[in-house]
Image (cartoon, rainbow over all chains, first blue to last red; front, top):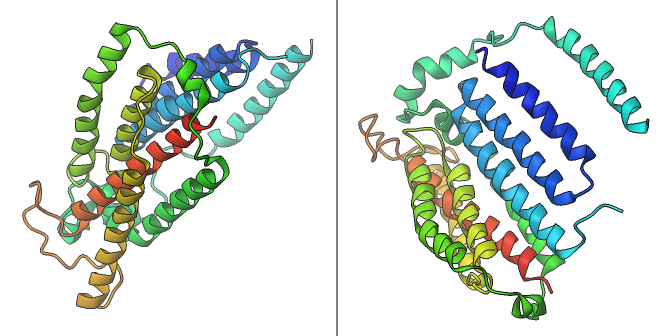
Length: 78
Length: 227
C-alpha cells in the first residue's frame, strides 16, 4: 500500500502540469497521465472493473477526442 | 503571481477537505447489503463476478437507463455534428508512415479480440459490456488516427447499435412474459464458473458491448468526418 503515495504525488504533478502548459497537446497528455494513474489506483484498491473503464475511457477515448479537437482548432494557447 | 496564489488556495482547500474526510472511516462497510450480495450473489444470479450480478441482475433497470443516456448523447452529438459532405482536409492530409499504418493494421484485430473477450466473459472476470465496448471503440480510434482515409460504414454502426438496444429490451420483455417481472433472469442459471451460465446476463452483456462499441465509434467518426 506504500506504493499509493508516490502515485498520488505523480497524479498531482500531472494535474498541475495540465493547468500550466501553454502547448495544449502537452496538457492533454498530462491529463491522460492523471487518468492512467487513477486507473492504477483503482486496481490497487481492488476495483478492477472501474479500473478498466477508467483506463479505456479516461486515458484513451477522452485523450483521442481532445487530440482530434486540437488538430481541428489551434495547438497553442493565446 | 496569479498562479502561485491559486496553487496556495487550492492547497488550503485540499487540506481542509482532507482533514474532514479523515474522520470518516475508510473502507468499512456501513450497511449489510454488500455482505448480502457477496454471500448470496453467486447462488441467486449464477454470475461469479459480483459487480456484473449487481449491474445486470439486481440493478438491471438502472443499466437500461445508462444505455439510454449514452444513446441520447450519441444522437445529440450526431445531430449537431452530422454532415453529408466529405471532409476536404482528409484529401490533403499526407499519408502516415509505413511503420505507423502497418502497426495500426496489425493491432486493430487484436484489440477487437480483447474487447470481445472482455464482454463475453463479463459474468466471470472483471469487465463487461461497457468496458469491452469502449476497448472496441478505442481500436477504431487507433485506425482513424493512424491510417487516415479509412472510414467505418455509418449505416452498419447504426444497425448494430439499434440491434443491441433491441436485444436488451426484448430480453427484459421476455422476463415480463415468463415470470411477471421486467428483466427477470428466466433462463436456467447453469453451473457457476462456466461460460454458458448465469442465464440472460451474458446475452445482455454481449448486446451492450456491441451497442457501446458502435455508438462510441460513431461519435468518433462524427468528430473526425466533420469538414
